[in-house]
Length: 136
Length: 76
Image (cartoon, rainbow over all chains, first blue to last red; front, side, top):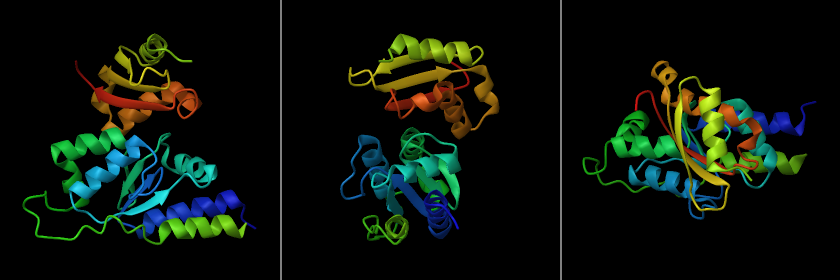
């Protein structure tokens, strides 16, 4: 029998493994609930990368388990191909230096072909985590 | 409520040779920005540098210190 905490932890690890670019944030990309999360979403949208987003607010255990896994105390947290890239400060610094697009592997804006940003798609991961929560 | 002077002191006494500048972002005593320069950062990745500063405050991050925005450098 796994505990609800273990189920949340597994759901988080699954979401990180399944999504090349995933942001754990407060609120959603359409309605961020914190300025740091909003700034991080704006940086990702500006480089035109699709990304999954998980709202950590619905259950405090999501943040506890996430911070335990990532050894990072604050939200937002950006993962690219399974690796923690950083929080808002690092995302912003990397955006400004062009490193963010490089790390994610998208062309810098301007050189990029016309592409509809899919950033607003919340995707499956948050639902998976929410489902696990409701099942307990 | 933590003060900028307290945060500065905790960083400088915990990380050897560190120099910190701390500002209160909104005057509310819970959102801060710290610029930290420490020799040991030369050996650390940016993410490890931030972890090192967060570790100074442990569970106070997300507690009394709601947000701590960081700029870290190895040299002034």
